[in-house]
Every structure is written in C-alpha cells, then in structure tokens.
Image (cartoon, rainbow, N blue to C red; front, side):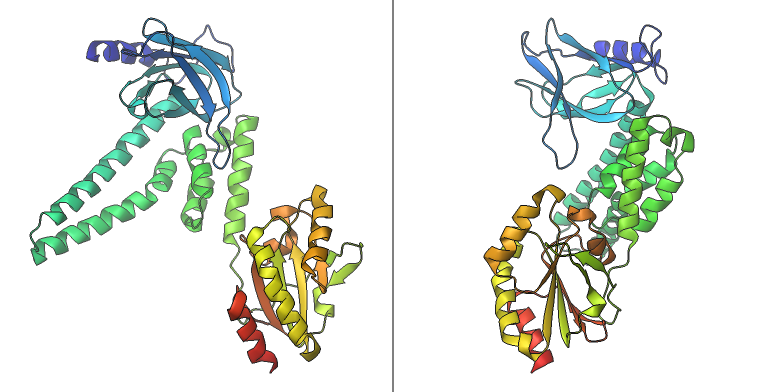
Length: 379
C-alpha cells in the first residue's frame, strides 16, 4: 500500500493547484484507488449540506481496485464519497481539476485526498485538528491514571483547558491563516450554521478572506452571502428586560394593518408562533386561558405567526381552531419575518411581555411561569 500511495502522491503533485490541461475550465476528474475493495461494488458521490438529506450526484463501479468519477462543477463544494460495503464516508472538496483519492477500505473517512489546492489545505486542516484531539485524549488518559496526585492533576487540567480553548477556535484560526482558500470559506459556512458561534472571531476571519477568492465564481459569492447573513443575524444583541420593545406594523389575516404601539394594554404579550410549530400549538391553550382571565383587567396579546407565504390558509385555520381571539398578524415570511428579526427570535414559541409604555418587563415565559407573571402584574 505504501508504494502505491507514494505513486499517487507523486502523480498528484504534478497537478496540485491547477487543473489538468486535458480538462475543461470547470471539469473535475476523480481517480480513486480502492485496494482490497471487491469488484462490482458501487461508489456514490453525494452532497453534504447541513440539515438536508444527502443527494447522490454520481455513481461508479469498482473494477480492478479503482474507479473514476467525472463531471462539471462551477466552484468548490464539500462532497462525500461512500462505497457499498465500506465503513464510513469520506468528505472532501469537489472542485475543478484532477483529484486523487487513496481509499482505505477499513476506514473510508481516513482516506487521503490529493491533487487540488483546496484538498491539500483540507488535509492540512484535518491533520492539525487530529493532533490537538489526540493530545486532549492523551491528557484525559493521564488524568485518569494520575492516582489522585493533586499537583499532577492541576497541571493536566490547566493544559487540558488550554488545549480545549485552542480546539474550540481552531477552525476560525485556520480560516484566518488561509485567507485565499475556498476551503476557508466553506469552513466558515459550516461554523456559522451552528448556534452560539463567536461572532467577533468569525467576522474577523470572514473580513480577512481574499476578495478575489470570494468573488471568483457564483458558488463562492452565494456562500459568502450566506455567511454574511448569519454574522449579521448573530450580531443583533438580544432584547432584554428594561429595553424598549421595537415597534412594528403588520397585516392581519384580513389585510388590516396593526401597529403594536397603538394597542394600549396595561400589559401586552407579544407571542411568536407558527401553525406548523407543535410546541406553539401545545402552548396556545395556556395563552387562551390567561387571556380569558386577564383581558378585562388590561391584558392584550399580539400573536406574530412565522408561517410561509403559501401557507396562509394553515395560519388562519390554526387561529380559529386554537381560538386565538386577539390580535393576529403575520408577514408570511417564515424565519425572514422582519418582526422576528427585530426581536432576535430564532426559536419558537417565544413571548415578550411589555408594559403600557412599551418597555419589556419579562420574556421567554411559558406555561405556569407566564400565568404567574401576568397574575403578578395585573392583580
């Protein structure tokens, strides 16, 4: 296997950083060495988008320890390779040029990918990340074997904490140090898809990316816009108790425009929900109970629905079925609703309780906690 791997590396280096002259500008060709894999097994090239079901882009058949995949791609994309009967999957960068893969039948995910610049960068990322992870594992093992030695345990904890901090920010720091790589842009796309990312550090990495790389093709431009949108959304400081609630105007099911500041309740609940949201529908009977008991004492409710434009009928049916006999509005823009963005709402149900001056006095209350708070304010 070592001899074959060396041959693949030497061949791949001849093509690293530039497409082969025999390929067109956006064409890719993947050559996979599958030593030990049975002839006739099918290999699959698949998408890897987070939150989406993998879609098979192309397939090939293993013959005499190898197979090829060839096609067109306008830019760099994360893709996955799987082979029937082989454990795991290999994630790599699919991009124009010749790509060489040394597939390991015992662990496909550990296979080597060579031949294009971004895969070289990706391999460096995986190698460096593996070193950190292995050291963290080694420290954990030493701690378990420390026989309750206080001084040794203290030193190990300190080193472990330091490494975990490095590991937490490793992806962003790697992107900062490789500003000209498409992989860095793809990495930031992946990191911003997770909740609770470090906005300041991610922003630094994104702003430091090479402008030529970001605007190289439509694919990169699209990914860059997605990352920018995620950063801007996360940069919004969440509203808190004591803040003035953002005013808004939105349409009712009948098309009448309702303005929050013109609804003069002693206490107003702004309730973010949707007809498709099961937890919201479960919570609605509690809101109905609270409203029926305290509306005459000065309680108002404005429900803001995050339903889709083509699902208005579902919204109106849910209002009737759940007996939401108060103010109901929606821009029918799903998570892109401007009111939800103004209130930094990224999960529902979500409630904000405001006083007669429009000041937030409580938020994110549900069930008995919400009822107790309204009782406290209006009794």
